[in-house]
Length: 63
Length: 576
Image (cartoon, rainbow over all chains, first blue to last red; front, side):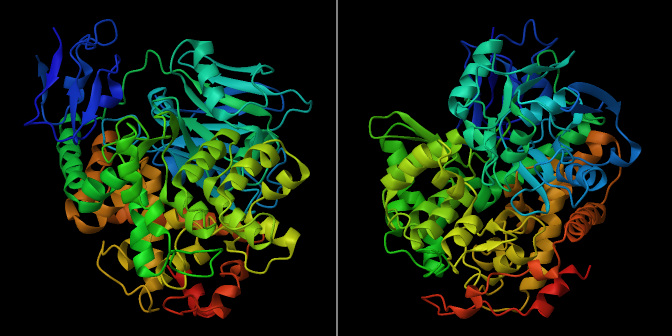
């Protein structure tokens, strides 16, 4: 299962992008989006998905 | 735990030290300038063993704060003879911060002729002799270094110009796409070359992001901060769409676009090189009109510019570069300018100094105005190859002016004046004259208030209020440069009160402290005073805080204005 970014909550702050270990997060139309095919939920890198830990608006949630 | 890493190139040793108490509250420019002022003799030769390179991420770098990934580099500048802080995006700053390295100080100089590389990882710092990658350009070097480590390590490198210790040489910083960002100004590539370092690589594997001491408070502040960046028309709309090159048409309209080596303020072919034209060209060729220079950038003012066949040419294609080769050298073809930008990044020369230099060289008859192909050829075959002519051109605008006997040489403290004519935008003229960095628009960007209506409006053609404006902007910039923030956060900071308060709140939450806005202003003032004292001790007196004479003698069309500040008026800048 991958994570997703809820566009209604995302404020485009880029916090998630800088720490995604699989570079699954990209900038689209001022907001960020997760490529589900690349998302590993940070398995093997962090204890829990780092995007959700860093997100300032609780926009990063399981897809 | 933060630490200071020292690399001694004289005896090829490394040392990890705790952070001295006085340096704990500092980061970025505040730290680089403090270290340089404390440890580099102001009268030393900038290319000698006594100079040091001080790399420092900012106070907020490594955290989740938007746009906090700028890297500061300090040293004595071989170009200006004074103190220098240059900052850039790329991936290195965040990696250093995550590794807990508050500053990387490179000192000394090898006694022999060998070249070296430095590798920084979580558990080890190593210095290795480098033979394979000498003489090659930055683009290829970044690819090769990342291939050597099998991962996208951070890379800071010098091209051939830095190896040859040219005064216009810069230090490249790899960005997330393995393209080039630059610690551009002041000839710091020559300092790295003098220490015989081809590149520094950084591996942050196994390091988590920097977590603030007060997480919930930090998130609250970061959320507000990000909203102000998105809400402001410059950081939220103009810069993301057109990049900094949105300024060509704006400055042309204002009569402040220096043209044909600073002999006019408007350029007839401005539309061919404008941000609007560039945007349409990028989109038509499948490039990227919006792009970030470092991970965690929200503003996305960078872009990827492709050629007619859709092949990558350059990124971070900035207004000042396009102005310099475009209006100032009268090159109308944006593709020629893009190609020149690529070569400048590759051989490792500052694209502002080099563009200003070519304007002077064209006036001297070294090549004709408008000769874009000639510029590309000279970059590759003269400067890049280190021919005698290339060595002269690589010394920057001031050197070319002296060699060819030219009197219209736009430099302050021997550093080329960028992109905004001080006669018709007087606030930026005060910054050029007074900045501790030499002519540097980023040290007090008065264009904001003189031209863009950000932070109020002060008539660009009048003298009133300009010294106070430039002083306040230089103080604020010195503080922003210490946080690791991109300077473009200054646009919302000047107009939206919550931007600055949330920035201070993020710093407080990061460290568990209680700074006020006044404390941040005091930090900016302290940084400028430290830098000013270093410059005075290095022999840069108030007579160096002046613009070249021609600005006072030659009226600039279309407004037909001259630079009319007296020395006594300018000296009041330092009354704080």
